[in-house]
Length: 226
Picture 1: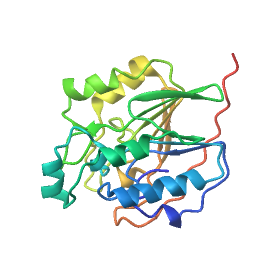
Picture 2: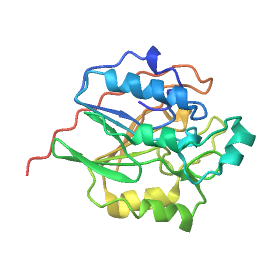
Picture 3: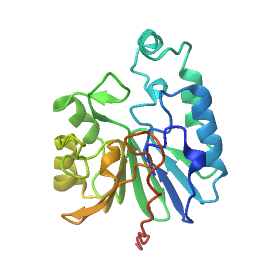
Picture 4: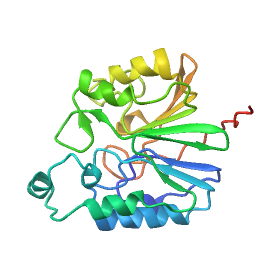
């Protein structure tokens, strides 16, 4: 799932071993709303819960100036407290910020970035700046979780413009080669496709009207046996 935008309690979740949320759990990263999301996620019966931030979680982006957040989004405060709360260890709950975790033999990497637009969080300019983030991802990851899509992979707006990241696509196809790429961000792109041996899952729960339109996607991936 992804892009639940504070409507996570409306979801009916299927059974599974690993529950993944690919960012935008809130509208603007309100600390109370983030805390509610964490509480809800922690209460789910899945053995492991993995999540990342999205561009709407502006308070989790330590590079955004607090004065800018106050002026643009109307929130004031020291947001380090909510960053610490989200990052705090909880049994079975894993917040990934440019990090890898291994679960049941599966290597999972999470990163919240997307090409810059609209002055939101976790933005990086296309080209060198965002490539630096993608180059941190190790090769051979089984499940790659990013907030935004790769170019041409379920990234089509209703204006028929593709807005995915070409730099990410190059890294995926030429070096990382994950078995599965889970993302969201582009609500219209919900669904599953496959290309060059990679399964691309746009798990956006909300539609363009920011109401829950899409069911969580179930994908069966066998654990690797060494």
